[in-house]
Amino acid sequence: WYPVWVVIDGSTDGTDQGLQEMASRDPGLKVFVLPRNQGKGAAVLRGLTEARAAGFTHALTMDSDGQHPAALIPEFMRISIQRPETMVLGRPIFDASAPMLRVRGRRVSNWWTNLETLGAGIADSLYGFRVYPVAELADAMARQPWMRRFDFDTEAVVRLAWRGVKPVNVDAPVKYLLPEEGGVSHFRYGRDNVLLTWMHLRLMLEFALRLPLLVARRVMRRPPFQS
Image (cartoon, rainbow, N blue to C red; front, side, top):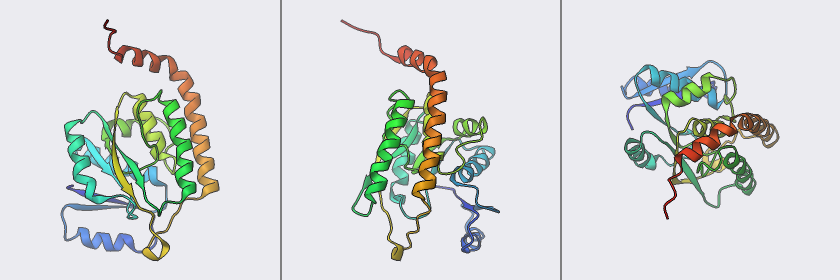
């Protein structure tokens, strides 16, 4: 994938200096440094804004902690090029390293996402290894102040589905690194589950207002009955 852009969300471990040094030797690498931690959604929005200004129509997003399989970038890119009207979503395949509480907890979020989108076909609402249409997602984020932190991944796919962007789900392994392997999780079960609960409450309220339009769109897309 070329080019590669990295957004550093207020990291204080020296990552920005190392990457900026790499970028000085590699024209395909660009680094954006946020002065303070603003959350995943805010970091992605910064990248989307820059990508849109540069004329890009789609962007693949992935975390930098080693969980997402970089080897699948060409496959995700190929599918997005073939079907540019869609969002290409990773469907996580967990191994023994995945905390069972996290695996079970995401099932709850996926159930609510399926309800909020009237079964649009989103296989996983939390896996951040994806290809987004830049303009649609940037516009959805610009219209409201939410989805700037851990609530970003789920709300992004819900709002894109509301805009008529269909999902394409692609199996992708996910690995949870051990602390001795460099794995450091910033997920906080209490804080982040409260954030997700508030997010789904907001989405359900908005879903109720959008329901007539969503049902009408579903009916219009249904193929005519043939005897």
